[in-house]
Amino acid sequence: MKSLATHKRCSDSAQSPYRKLWRAVLMGALKDLQGYPQSALDGQWRRREARPWFKSPDNGIGSLNWVCEITNLDADTLRRYGP
Image (spheres, rainbow, N blue to C red):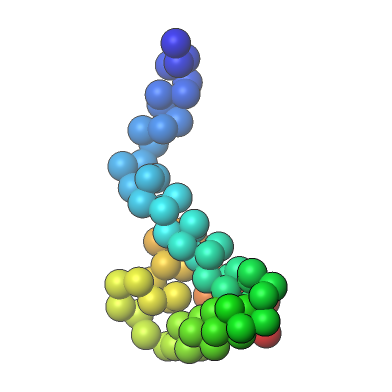
């Protein structure tokens, strides 16, 4: 049985599940930017596909700027983190 504190923490924000989802998307994109998995062709393809998303100034739904805004992260810091 879950404690009341656990229920309260889960209900603090109706958007919490969405933030978790978009953080997972962001983590996947960071891995792609780093070239994971390490297989030569797949890693190069993933890196090539991820770079434009990280560099884009777009603010639309699903863009890096949008994801960072809803997850309370700084897009410019993430851009500096990637290659």
